[in-house]
Image 1 (tube, rainbow, N blue to C red):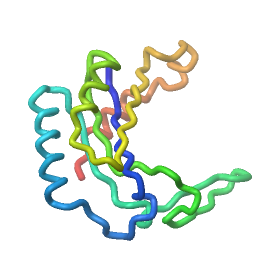
Image 2 (cartoon, one colour; image 1 turned 90 degrees about the horizontal axis):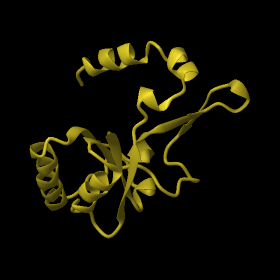
Image 3 (tube, one colour; image 1 turned 180 degrees about the vertical axis):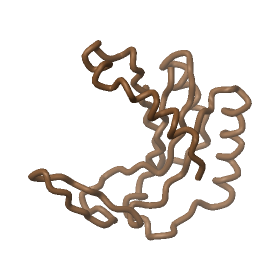
Image 4 (cartoon, one colour; image 1 turned 45 degrees about the vertical axis):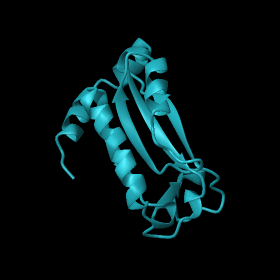
Amino acid sequence: MRFMMLMIPKGYEQAKPGTMPDAKAVAAMMKYNEELQKAGVLLALEGLHPPSMGARVSFAGGKPKVTDGPFAEAKEVVGGYWMIQAKSREEAIEWASRCPASDNEIIEIRQVQEMSDFSPEVQKAAAGFPDLQAQAGRKTA
């Protein structure tokens, strides 16, 4: 089973453009990331710039509308994520519990939907999805 662990740092929703974590926090997080990798559970990980550097596209009335960050109504935002492979929800929780997060950080754990989770009708409608995933996996940053 794949799980996404979402880092939600309190206060990050109002962080100024270019806000970066301190070196000590990054060093502790790198040690944790290396533990995930050595255990063979890490599939992907990334940190995200603050919402003040982002944009949201909404579709009220079927028409796209762009709103630049920061977003006044945001109470929690994602600061980064890990994608891990775990045998169970409990194992994913165990890995999240080992993170050297600070008092103002929360990790939300969400299981990734697999094609087998869906009804035959939905699987048929998404027939090309595995090909899209494979092609997306070949791209580099």
